[in-house]
Image (cartoon, rainbow, N blue to C red; front, side):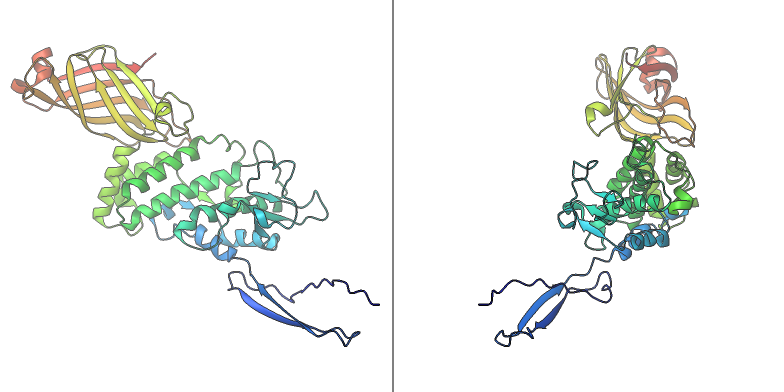
Length: 413
């Protein structure tokens, strides 16, 4: 009696299908030459080529092309990153599809990672990406997912240069380039003329904040250019000063109307000094709030409240027991100055509401190094209050005898 046993089959292709190709079916007939009683078996299967990882890399790195941001920022050399894919033979898997165990000693959290394959002769080099972050296509909705792929490819490039290791500085290059790509995305998208200009500006500023302060970026970044082909020729502050006050010098395809709108947004929302109580913020309003007190002058004792959240000056308020104070507008004055200009309406609570003063107020926090990758902490302001009313209708003139007065405000103890 013959005992029939299962027979495993492995189909080996002579060449890998092109990345990004559509799924295609195969059919195979298997006959048993030693037993004519066994009918031939017809096997069907489907070949699933890898997604077009090289196309994704090109799309991502060339995202800012033809924008104003491209004059200052290069995200990386396409050829270098595509060569990194070749180095690992395009072994990029969703976490659930890794052919080997992904429970590495240094990766207990299950994060996306690059595995060199050197610790286990049975394990090849590969990139594993969390299932919900695995890129499947080339479009704006996939940007963050493709960004994850490019982030891990940065580690492959480090490995190619013999410097990849998991330690305190291992994310320096990848996060530097990742945050820079987020800044670039916001700046590129704002040129599209969409209705989301404010959102795009905030996005660029928020990620520029992390580009400056992320504690993961603590190693040597001098290899950004030669290893990765990345480039950032100005500082964050210099870049946003150009968008706020020198849009006429920017490249790109923005109309004059767009340039003016972009400039107004950056002047209003960006401020290069840290006005909050936190050295590094995580996004909460409480951590982003800073309070200053008027120490002298007409409004002595008044309290300023700033909400400066990850580089965005979201709001300014000023409160005093004897006055109703409305801040109608504010903006950064640009350059290397920590200076704000505000438009304020001032009313005396004991006088009729029509008896108000329109003020132009300048808050000067000094100068800073505009080329530095940091946000200096602001501790105090010299304040100048100037009435825009004639002296007969000027509230501060009635109170002090002057149409322009000065005061000093400092961070609340």
